[in-house]
Length: 297
Ligand code: GUN
Image (cartoon, rainbow, N blue to C red; front, side, top):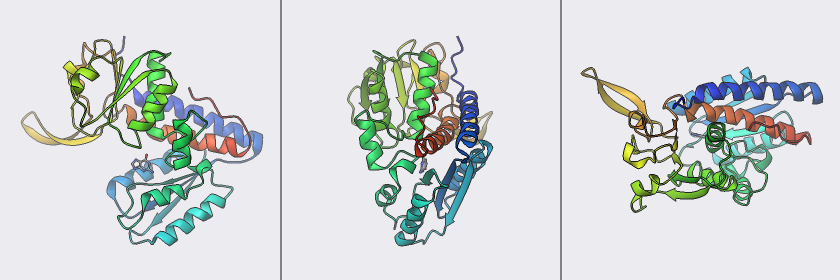
């Protein structure tokens, strides 16, 4: 069996499905799904993410609306823009790229987005809906992880799953999604005692802590499926030369002969996140027209 879970390939399949759904709503309802992305300031990593999101939105046949604002933009100006986008019928999804400059209140900004257009799934209403098992917008990274797990394992019911990391963006929503799949879920974090032993008893490990190569061979139950959300830039000596490389939270080379499946970094969860953002935008456009949700699983 192929051990590597190819997120790049899977995300292409998902983007193809999104494009089909876009074509269908254009034909059925005469509308083009639209995604508005707001970038405040000039954070280099955020600029790259926003550029990729715009490019892939257009490739999927949707409209992309980019709003680039100065780093000194006031809260009032930003909130007014969001108000305008909330009312704009051509905009089905709104994403405000994080992190925001320090003078802006992220929670206030996120919660000012219409929950039905909140394609990040970060609005407090969507968090509450997901926590109580109701229809919501699901945060893109955990949704991507879930799609990869279901594709690889099939029925997740009864599996033990540990999520390493308790962030609002990944850890907590991931735990809720896996609970809904009837997994037995543990959230492990920096204060968890015997974390290695907790992980080594799990059928599924989702690593989202931001600690380079923390999950070693001994942490993994033979035959487990390991999803690596981490993206860490580290300096490594390769052939005697120091180079900056990307590594995950999992020691990838350790997984050979232990894990049944593992996502690489890069090329695992990363490409799934943007594909799920496109999927959420299409879903939001379908809901806006009273259509039932497109199926991506
Ligand atoms: N910054 C890094 N990842 C994300 C994301 O998924 N959504 C938003 N809005 N900002 C981010």
